[in-house]
Length: 157
Image (cartoon, rainbow, N blue to C red; front, side, top):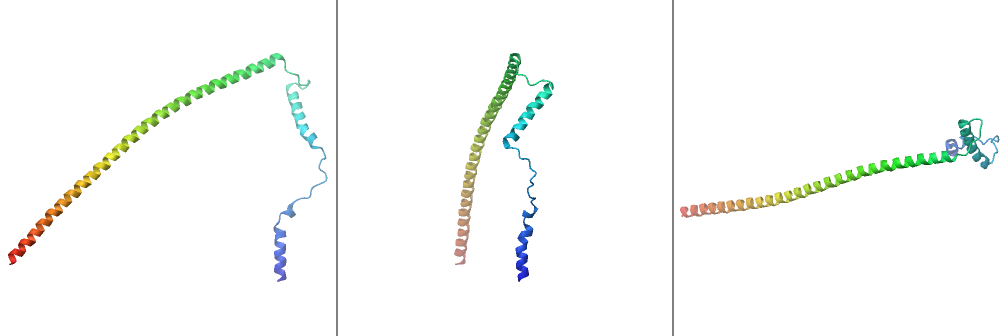
């Protein structure tokens, strides 16, 4: 019994993943968080400066460059507005087409419903006539059979 209890006690220890974790090393850098977050921004700015002109620092934009950038942005905005207007017109046209098609389908649906009602009423009228004809034939056969039996009895006397 003690072997089973030892096995049951050792099984969770063997199955756990705690033994697979490495202890933290003491060689981690001790730089503050603020310094770490500021470093990538400086690196990006330095990379942009080296790409533009490796010998000079980043220069502020001139008034002409700012005006040109604004004009480019305005042109892009105007192009987007024109594109949106074109898409809006296409959507409106598609919407009108869908509405007309919807109305046509509703009219067809209404016509088909009327036709179904007419066919159902014709069918019920036809069944009424069949029932009346069957009843008439049954009554006629009943009179003929009754008269035949009645005349047969008179002949026997």
